[in-house]
Structures are given as structure tokens and as C-alpha cells.
Amino acid sequence: MNYRIALLKGDGIGPEITESAVAVLERIGARFGHHFQFTPYMIGGCAIDAQGEPLPAQTVRGCLESDSVLLGAVGGPKWDDLPGEKRPEKALLGIRSALGLYTNLRPAKLFPALRGASPLRAETVAAGFDLLIVRELTGGIYFGDRGYRTGKYGEEAYDTEAYSVTEIERIGHAAFRAAMQRQKRLVSVDKANVLETSRLWRKTMHRLAESYPEVEYGDLFVDNAAMQLVRNPGQFDVIVTSNMFGDILSDEASQLTGSIGMLASASLGSTTRGMYEPIHGSAPDIAGKDLANPIATVLSAAMMLRYSFGLSAEADCIEQAVNRVLERGIRTADLTGDTGIEPVSCSAMTAAILSEI
Image (tube, rainbow, N blue to C red; front, side, top):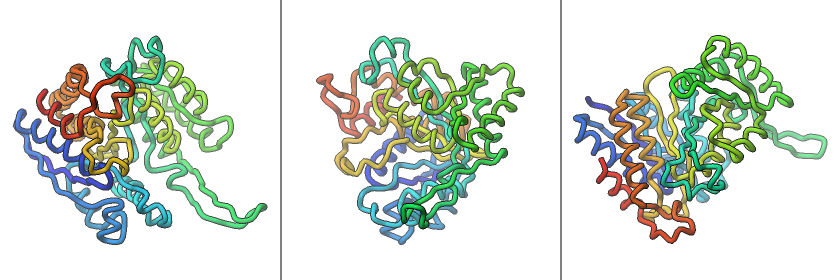
């Protein structure tokens, strides 16, 4: 099979980690008889420097013409003083909207070899955890009306959150379907004791739950959900929540796995085309130093194989290779902590993963 992949390397460590994923995909292609064609496009700060805008039209066209998209990371202090509409991060919202990617899947799994790297107590993570956060991606406060105005105390800024029943229904169905393929347990996270959008969210989710009687369903306020994640992450199977809440909770969950450098993500819509990226940022402080952890991006590539191309065996092969590398005690700097283990470089970790495929 032949697959066309739009490659958005982005800024900071983006080029390094995406090249690692490309190398892994090429190895998978050689083993399983597939061909992956990678076409690079600019996004984020590098696009601003080269073309004056964070999301050039040719990047959007290229992604739409591809079978899937692999993204590195965008942003950095170099562009911090730009107005909001011109910042690199604006490109992420734009490309998600352009591709119609309203569902974000963020798995948080504690690999057995990394139990000691989790900040939680050993007894809390003794049984491990494997949860999935389903985050709504194209609505909510990140896409609402915003601006400045004069208020009671002078100049003030405002951001508006709005959700429609249609938006809640489509992410809700996605979450229930994901739960049906896992342990059939789903928790919806909101702030229905305060926010009208959350009240509509909860009302809609309760109605959807009637169509999935096999799924054990419950609700949590977001503050309680944040507490429960650190108290006992193993209690969760699938979590569904809004754009901003999902952004925050998935970063919290990532740290429980030992490092944010371990968490992949998939952004999906109504077609098989998806966008796959690590959830961490561009880490400009280590860019170009061969220090980054490529695992999140490599695992994102595995998610691409599974969700966009239907290549489950190939995805399993990558995930098992990562697990074996970790079992061998190979760690990048973000995973070593106070273990005394000598960290390896980004390229060395990539080579180790390749050797296991």
C-alpha cells in the first residue's frame, strides 16, 4: 500500500522528533511492504519567518491532499511578542479547523518499565494504568469570541465559551465508541455546577448514554477529575471533556506516565485523514542538541497507522518495540530523573527503537 503523509516539522525540536518518526515508519514500510511518501510543509514560527504567516495556504492544501498529517511542534519565545492572530500556536487551531478535526484522542499509559519514573507513590501505580482522554478540539473557549473592552476596573480582556448540541453529540459519540472498544467505562468531565455550557454538555451526554447501555457512564466536575487522576489514575478507562479541560487534564495525565515526552495524540474528524502529534511543546531550550525524547512522536505515528490506515499489526509492532527498548533500560534525559542511568540522545533512542522492529 502507498500512503501520502504531509510532514509538518514545525519549530524547536519538531524537526528532530518528526525525523525519528519518519525513520520508524520507513522501517515499518520495509518490513510490511508499504510505501510512505512524505511531503514537507511549513507551519508555526518557521512559516512566519519564511512567509509572514503561521499557516500558509499551501500547507492547508497539502494537508487536504494527503492521506494523513504528522506534526512536530510549533512556537517558541522568538515569536512571543506577536499579536494573538499571528502567533505560531494560531496555526494549530487553524489546521484543526481546516481539516475538520473535532476529536482529539490522548492516551496516557504507564509502561511497566517506567513505574519508577512516575511521580506517584509506588503503591498507587503498582497495577499501572492505561486511560484515554477524548478531547473536543474545534469548539469551546479556544474558538469563541474574544477581545478587549473597558469595564468596571478599566481595560479588561474576555474570552467566550460556547458549545452547541451538535458539537457535544459528535464528540460524545466518539467517546462512547472508544469506550466500547476498551473496558466500556466512560467518565464525562465538566463544570456543570457553574457553567451553562457544562450544563448543556452534561444534559446531552446523559441523553447519549441511553444509546450505549453497555457502557458504564458517570460524570465528574473538572476539579474533582484533576484530583482523582493523581489519587488513582487506574480507576479511569475513557474520559471525555471539552477543549480547554481536555488540554489541561491530558497534560496532567502525561506527567503521571513519567514524562510528557511519552504521550502521543490523534486528531480525527469525519474522514480517515487525521493529524498526529506529540502533546508536548517545541522545547526550544534543547532544540538542535539531539536531547529530545522522540517516543511521543513515534507513538503518534503508530496511532496514524492504526486510526487512519487501519494497519493494526504495524501499529502494534511500533508500540511493542518502544516497550522493549524501555525494558532494556534505555532512557532519554527526561526519563532518567535521579536513577543514575546515563541518558541517550534522541538519535540513539530512535536507533534503539529501529533495532527492535
